[in-house]
Figure (cartoon, rainbow, N blue to C red):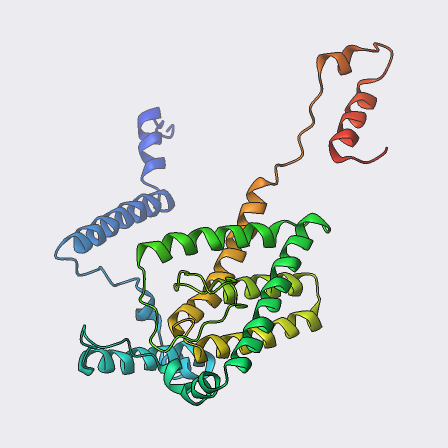
Length: 301
């Protein structure tokens, strides 16, 4: 007796009912069903909102090791809590009183000494003016002689924004200001208090010196800047906040000047004019390309 023949339809049904393929299909359906359930769960009441949050992966060692591996941010966090308590419990200075400045309190003995010795005050003012001239001379030297304009661009940025901020909020001249005819601005003329251009320009020059590894000169400028800082407080020529922001302004505008320089550096583009490409039909095109590239870079073949 002949064996029964399998029709094409029964053969097709047999292949689709085999276990491996059936498992795959069932697995895909199960995965799709789970994915739909997860989406439904996350969309319902936001219960899955923090499921993949970073803090959910923290362990005990991570929490306890924060202070060991990140001491500076931890100090900042502690200072934040401390100053929050100070800010909300400290009585504000009334409008009729002069501003409270901790730098003025710290330099009170030096202020008295300069007030009783006008000649000493004039000498220190003259030396400070010389230091300002050193800052200006170095910044211009880097551009005009060395061909590095970053410090000059930074100084232009800094003084422009100083003028805007200084005019926007004009602080009162501190009581007890000890002016001098040889101080800068020369002639004891009026000036913006916020922020200190003296300090910011010194920081800009010092940062440039470090970029070109003039370490000794940079350290000298930093030391002179600290002395300038103390003198300006002692003479009441600036509030403490003016000097502190001056340091930050020097760093900020030096960074912005660097970003400006980077934005002006265009990628090398090979530009070939029709005349240059077809002037000599016998010259290979690769020679023309090479000549154009060398001309762009300013080098020989």
